[in-house]
Image (cartoon, helix red, strand yellow):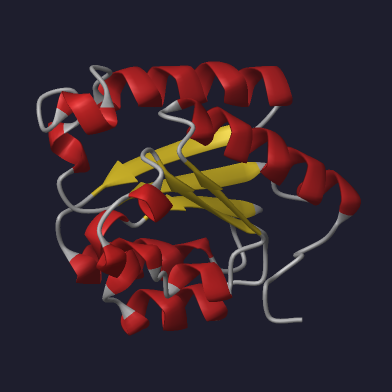
Length: 154
């Protein structure tokens, strides 16, 4: 069985550490990637890490996971609240999916409280800062080990 976990990051996360550090912290996306690779090695997971400001590119990466990757960790950022297309792509993936948000979206603007991605996610981690990524990897490793999808679809 594959031990590849693909970590996908949506728009503006390339500015992590520079954009609104009072909300998102001072760690950069490179820092997050390094920590995910460290955790991946500990959990014996092969990590692929991507970020894009382009919705179609994220969709293409999700499509590329089919039949190849064991799981997906996704921080869709602003696409969380807008992208049915990302939801549809995730619906075509048959492994576990964990949605991550650095900030607690439930304590922010009303529009941030709705997620299209949550409908298909095996789990959702919010408000744990960048530690949410390593928590997501631990959960994916557990689900892979159990051979489960645990989707939100029932």
